[in-house]
Image (cartoon, rainbow, N blue to C red; front, side, top):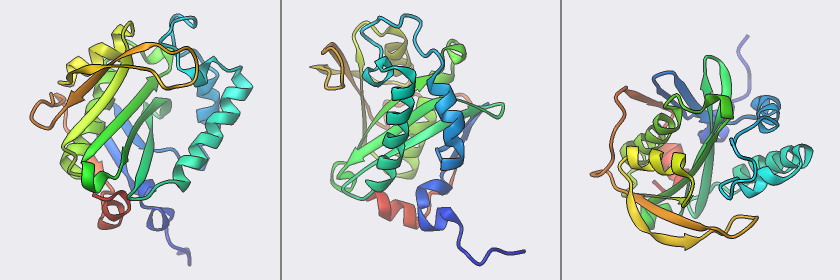
Length: 219
């Protein structure tokens, strides 16, 4: 029986976005995914929980961490507009959620610049997924949305994150003090352009980049 109601992706175009790269599938977290997402947030992400590289939101007790993360996901959806947007893409492999790759922008139509952040559960480290999911995000940003710059930052001692940036073609772009909750740490800033981008060795398939999505994001 055909539903009399439109698909959710028609009402909110980011829900139709799907990226496939080798063993990884990236798509916006939906409400149906949030129980799996909550379970993942209770699992280890960092080898050293005391490292300065640990995200401020991860330092909270697990129940607080989950509650605030769910509020954060719902809030991001309400803020998507050409002036400011963030797309939290869940990362799936072999049918299970293993992390998240965000891509965000402010006044994208004018600035043509995206920023990003990402994390993987600890048992998914060391398999090349961090580089591949960042590369998939950059294919979306550069090839589909018309970004001209992608910026990122990592704590200077976070060697794994720095290595991912280098593998994707990012170059140094100065330093800054962190603005995230928790202790202020020195961060290395990175920048990559379409010309510098080191593409993945596997094809990246992108679905759901419609005129409606581009208009919503200012692309």
